[in-house]
Amino acid sequence: AAGGLARTWRPRLVLAGLACAVVGAAPLLPLLRDGILPPQNARLLEVSDLGLCLAAAGAVAGGGRARRRLAGLAPAILLLLAGLRGGWAIADTREWANSGRVAEAAIWRARAAAAGEEAGEVPLLYERFPVHWEGAYCLGYGIADRFRAPFPVSPRSVWPARPVYGQSRSARPAIAAAEEGFVRPWRETRDRVPILPVTVDGLPDGAAVPVDERVAAAGPDTSPVLVVGGSFPAARLELLLYTELGYEPFAWTEAGGAAEHRLSLRELVRLPGSPIATPGDVLVLTADFGATSAYLEVRAVRAADGAILAASRWLALEWDEDLVDRLTEG
Image (cartoon, rainbow, N blue to C red; front, side, top):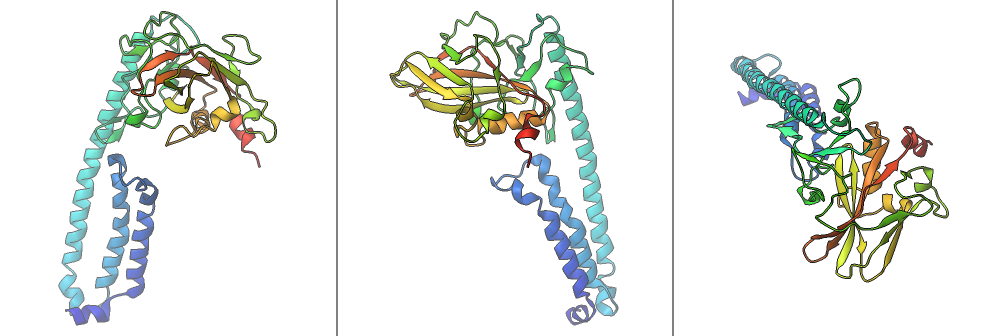
């Protein structure tokens, strides 16, 4: 049988099938950089099946006894693969349908809870949006869009209260206590920690900080400068950037005994304080989804255990819709 197979196989067809299998597996490489393949991407392993089937067909192609002996085996393998893929496809369909129902239920609960809120610009943060349900995506992106036109409009925007990149090490406790899953950062009754004084040179208190071409320009830094007051000898300063996709923390500097710390917006967007991304990366990501604003909170946290010693009020960051396009032209 082996001799007959050697005389009848089609080398080009086998090689073409193996090449298709390798190319089909290529999309997995960037997903495997961290050594983990998320369950919702495991189906990409099935892309190579067609190439392997083609290679098998090349191996049994042609005439002779080898072909006749293997002729019954090939259809059985194909039927087995079709049955497995069909069963998995049905399970996937049910999984995604369940995920959609869970997502709609979470949106409905959040909308009902937000309906009685006082209208305002500062968003509500909601803690109960699931990113995944079983092995399917659920509410990873687009949450804020569901609370504005053409959907029913809520009195305030609703953003997820979770790390943008889903890393547990990026999770931080809220300053204000959550009620019905909502965190309301604009309230002045912040009795958990003292308020950390933060101002912006040249801007009145409460004014939005403009994010424009100055954050990426060469030459002298003329971008707005944040000024943080207060002395915290055994603490470090940390920035929390809140966006429509969630929040992300960034380490800034040791507080030491200095009475003042200054940070320009250009320096801020380039801070390497997170192992995943810079603040600029997070702003570009949220801008790519259509956002034109974010909020910044500065915290003084104890170096020994991360306890929050003081936190600033939110500073609004705003930019034009086409800022990213202008920065990336050429």
